[in-house]
Amino acid sequence: MEKLEMLYEGKAKKVFRTDDPKLYIVDYKDDATAFNGEKKGTIAAKGVVNNTMSAIIFEMLETKGIPTHLVKLLSDRETLVKAVTILPLEVIIRNVAAGSFSKRYGVEEGRPLAKTVLEFSYKDDALGDPLINDDHILALELATEEQLVIVKKYTYAINAALQEFFLDKGLKLIDFKIEFGLCDGEIILADEISPDTCRLWDVKTNEKMDKDRFRRDLGNVESTYQEVLARIKN
Ligand code: TMP
Image (cartoon, rainbow, N blue to C red; front, side, top):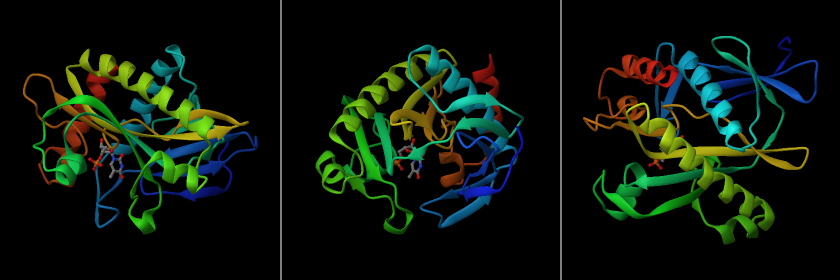
C-alpha cells in the first residue's frame, strides 16, 4: 500500500490517502508540543515508540471487543488505518487526580478518586480544547445521544483493559485521552494510545513515565519513551 497525497498534518502525525478510499496511512513524527502548541520540541524516536505502542494496544483492545481503526503496522513510523471522520471530542478518563484536573479543582496530584471520572473536551485548538458536557455536545450537535452512549461504554471498557494491561508492565494508568471516529456510520477507536496521551506512573517509584517529562522539563524524556515501549513489548 502506497502513500498518496497528504490529507492532514497534525502536531504529532501526518495522514495520507492511499489508492483505497477506505484506508489511510498515518505517519508518526517526533515533534512534541504542549500547552496547546505554546511549547515546542522534538523527542527523538517518539514517532517510532507511539506508532509501535499504539498498534500493540489497539490489537489488544480488539481482542477485548473494542472496534478500532487499526488495519496493520506498515513500518517503524507508519500504520495502515481505516478512514474515519473524527468526532470533535477528546474523551478523557481519570483514575487518579493529576494535570488539569488537579489544577482546576485544587487537589494534589496522586490523590485517588472516589469515582472514575469521564470528561469530554471539545477538540478545537483555536478555543484551547475547552471542557464540555453531554448537554453541550448534544446542543452543538457534535455527536448524537446514541453515539454518546456507545462512546462512554467503549471508554470505560478501554479503561478497564488498559489498567490491567499497564499494571502487568509495572505502570499505573493515572489518566488518558482517546478519540473516536465514524467509519460506515459505526463508532470506532481512532488516533493513538501512547505516552503522549496517557499518564503512566511507575508502580514502585511513582516516577512519571509519560509526556509530563517533556511538558514539565523533568529530563530523561527519550529514555523514558524507550523504557515504556520496552515494557509494553515484554
Ligand atoms: P490534562 O490533565 O492536561 O487535561 O490531560 C489529561 C490526559 O489527556 C493526560 O493523560 C494527557 C492527555 N492529553 C492529550 O492526550 N492531549 C492533550 O492535548 C492534553 C491537554 C492532554
